[in-house]
Amino acid sequence: MPALQMLLSRLTSTTTTNNLFYHKTDTINSSYSKHMHYTRCNMQLNPSKQRGFTIVELLIVVVVIAILAAITIVSYNGIQKRAREATLSTNLGSAAQQLKVDLSLTGDGIYPATLAAANSGRGVPTPDNTIYQYTVNNTAIPPTFCITGSTSGIDLMVTESTTPTAGVCPGHTAGGIVKPIITNLAPNPNIELSASGWSGSRIGTVVKVDGGAKEGGSFARSTVNSIGSFPRAGTAPLPATPGTVYTFSAWIRSSASVRASYIFNNGSTVVTPLIVSNNQWVRVSVTSVSAPAGTTTMKGYFGITDDSPIDTTFDIDGAMITTGTGTPAFADGTTPGWAWNGAQHDSTSFGPTP
Image 1 (cartoon, one colour):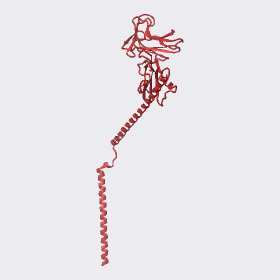
Image 2: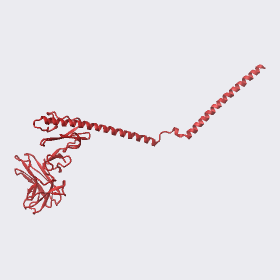
Image 3: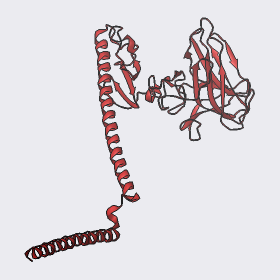
């Protein structure tokens, strides 16, 4: 009997323990089920917790990054440009100072004819990627010079009396693009101030007329006062060099047909065929033979038909006298990039080929 009671007691204890175990297991399972249910419900109610960036958000980020990059690049480029300008300014200042030293050291008080001749022939140092253009006028009192320095899209200029500043010297070109330099030998080619230096044959006094010009604001007008061959007007006698070929060109307007000619002091001359004008501006030109030995002066003439009636008028504008056979477009000291060799509208002028 005691043995039976002990066995029943142990069975009862085991059952109770198992019930507790099952109860705890059920509790845990129930809690896990509730948690999973909550999690699933929460995920369904809050789907944003598992999504990525939207297209709009990504675009905003890209735009912000692009703006910051642009600001950085612009700032960097600006710093680089200022550094290049400072370097070019220093180099130009040094070149100008060397020319002034040369002026003071030479016995004749003139600047070097070229930058390569400066510093006793050692020249002015030219940094890499830099182009210098140099103009000197040793006939001026006092002598003058101008240097243009160009590098990486930057142009600075300096003269004998200024510090380096932005821009290019007269007769120079921006960007260091060196074009052939030509000279217009006509001292008053555009008749802007007066008709000084112009005269002719079978005409009265050449006069300046304002308005209606082909080049600039005025032109030269001649009026026939004597019937005969080739009524004409021309420049004052100009220096000429034996063996040199010259081209004379100008705009002419008349009711008569027009033409051009030239004459050397030894009598050599050529007259071009007539060109119909019909009171419209037409460009006429003539190229000389090589100036003969002994030639010292020349004249360019522009005129009209032989035996034109008295009071027939013809107008001249934009005269161009150059060496060689080409006929360049008109230019003088008022043309951008060109400069006068002396007084405005009363001297030769030079600059890059138009």
